[in-house]
Length: 402
Image (cartoon, rainbow, N blue to C red; front, side, top):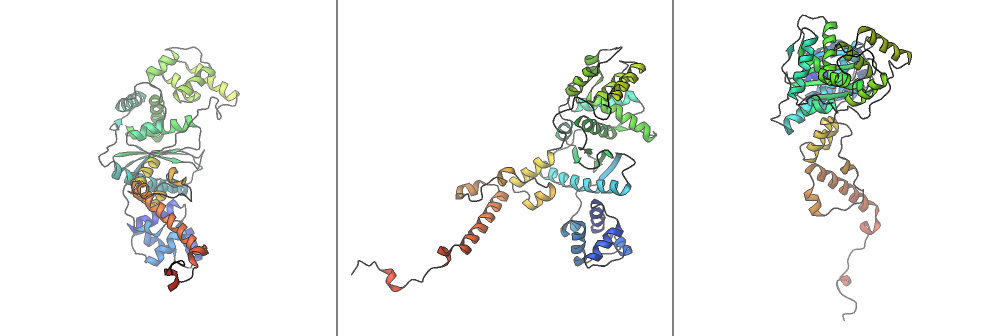
């Protein structure tokens, strides 16, 4: 367990073994790369003193190495560009695994009987299978054919885990996998426009919902793209919006549909072509129009809102309010997730005993600790409380009594 956690922490920090060795030497803990490798492989056991120094070098707490992983992640697909090197890929996987493990742990405590609602992976051989699988998932989630307000919310509401990644925009689109073979896990890069973010998440759902046996990676990606478009805009919805056959599509019309369904103009053009609504010539001409306007990489009709996941934050605040976890644990699971009402309390406010008893245990402990610190400061600096003369015998009697 310790060996796995050492490697996980190093990868999450984005460091090579050589870089860790260098950091440890600078911290007064010299070690060879071979010795560090033995620790990571479980062939040797590090001392407590070494783990303390290593924790500082990797930016984690020493207790991290003793933590038993609560979930196992099996990765499926990684949509990345060639500029994203292997070390960076490993860092993303390691950090996401930590976040997902924490969320899975909270879900197991707060919702012990919850099971994800997902379709069993369908064997897919072609575009029709991708369309059918997307329809099956929408049916399982009772979405009908209406536009989806938030893809992230829909996934989270049905037991999926979505992790946001805000770095590497332009180099990384999405990552998907399974937690313990039961809970779907999707990673989305929120550093891109919202329509692309929604599409990327739907694309990752496609990788989890379809089993493309004997296919090349390129063909698997092609079917995942088809699934994503079909999930966001079912065929019947597209026919209803555009008609069965069109000789021309107006880009402004597609811009309005983009805002309604959250599917980009370029994806709408492709969707219309895939469904036979427009011919190849119209399809090519529309793309040329976008390129001529400089809108291939900067589409008009931007979508408002965000696809950022909220389930982890909500569960962290709930667990903190109910005293299930400490504030320290809350910050570890979800940095900056301290309840807003707790942050907003005036420093000088006085609470009655009744108010304190009504508070959740974790919040009450936080308030009492703050009050104790304030009282200590008051007694230390206020001379009226710390400087007084001892009582004498005369102080026991009133002056006017003879």
